[in-house]
Length: 421
Image 1 (cartoon, rainbow, N blue to C red):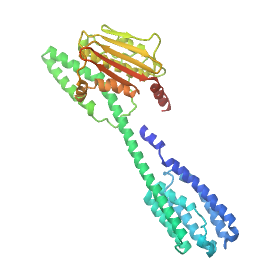
Image 2 (image 1 turned 45 degrees about the vertical axis):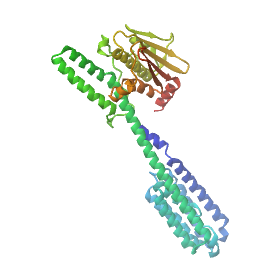
Image 3 (image 1 turned 180 degrees about the vertical axis):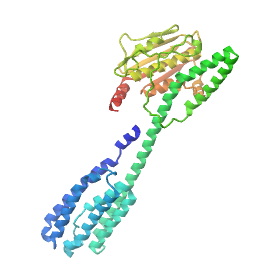
Image 4 (image 1 turned 135 degrees about the vertical axis):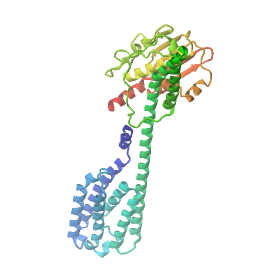
């Protein structure tokens, strides 16, 4: 719903309603001023004075009604248009015949505001009905098809219908934008769930499949079932639909540190420092990455802390874990990996490099098509959500290098956005 609220704040209707309120007040003052300056020319001035008094009270009292579409009801629109039509028809009783032929009506251009209210509220069809009623009243009051009268009525008719059409198009565009924002939020949530599942459930199922196959017997059957569930779950997270009830801003609870005794399991430890789940202050990225340093994995880091917002630090750490998991899975047990952390003035850079056989050309696209989202979601997806990027360089026979870059400006913008929420 956050996306829909943003669209409502961006609505083009709000400035239109504000402009309409200002137009009504200004045209009311114009009608009053015209009545004062032409008072001595009226044949029945008391009709003009009485009507303008009613017009002034009605305009000021109904200003809250033109604050938005919800307050501007059909009943109000009908009453508002009636006030304008009554003033047009009363002009014939308050003024002389000579002045009626070429002079203004009692409400003058105030009736245009009533027609515009129809346009903003109901679109061009409502505007056509209201402007036609005003045109008919003016022709009855004038008693003839004078050229200037016809020109003025056509102008009001075309302008009101045009504004009504623009409002309809704007509303349709806003609905489309709201839907697009909802789809984007749902897609991001599905990608987040896919990353979490890839980093936990899928890896466990893969481990059970391998261990069961190696042990044989009943364990082999259990491994076969785990393999089937792994395939089904990969298909779901790579293309499944997200339940609408889940919020797009849900943050998973930080799990406790999980480790693997051997690289054979294919499960890489995801490091969570003691204070990593605390969102009260920045987290030192070095603390989260320290548990990754083990036999075969070297960690090089700056001498000073590398502070990051907790959520960003967790996501970046998880991306590093996913990169190391790929090393354990595909580079072999004897492969070595190096993690380099760089705190540059504009960016935070984390590079994961290994001396494995590298990735064959086209293998990443093939893996993504099979539902294996280690690089697509667990690494690139996380960095994209942080406003950063993940570059993967692999040369067959020369290992693989994954460069994770997070601009500090993007992190600051995310922090301000979170504070506003």
